[in-house]
Amino acid sequence: MTRQLLHFDHVIAIAPPSAAGRSVINRADLWKALVFRARYPGYFTPGLECTLQPVDDTRFVRIISFADTQLRDEVTLTPHEHIYSIVDGRHQPMHAECKVVIEEPTPGQFAVRFSYRRDSISEHGGLNADEFLKSAYVQNDREAMNRLLEMLAEGWLHPHS
Image: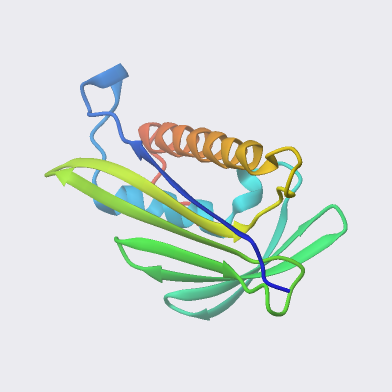
């Protein structure tokens, strides 16, 4: 059986410091915030439980549990550039990949690109459930980025301290 995959991406621009009282954000702090989200997805998505298994300095495995499902998600960090995660569908009930990339269209102006590739949940001739799924991903990413930016504005820099 061939998997039908859903591919989509979206970009969240980080408001410049002058907008809405935002403080200056640098690449290093943005990176720390994105890694925090990667390590602690349950903080941003209620109902998810996550156990981490370190591999090395740039890789770890997340065992993500929700409802009665458990997935093994392999995460690779390319420091200060991007985070890539994969739930390998060859060995698990679903396939999902995500790449989160820090973009800098102009010096000091950042955006975060979220690229997804995962099993489609739409059925031929039925409701296009993939559109609802995409909308949920975008909303979750926006809410998480807003929370991360708030945490940075509040002086949060060291999530493990």
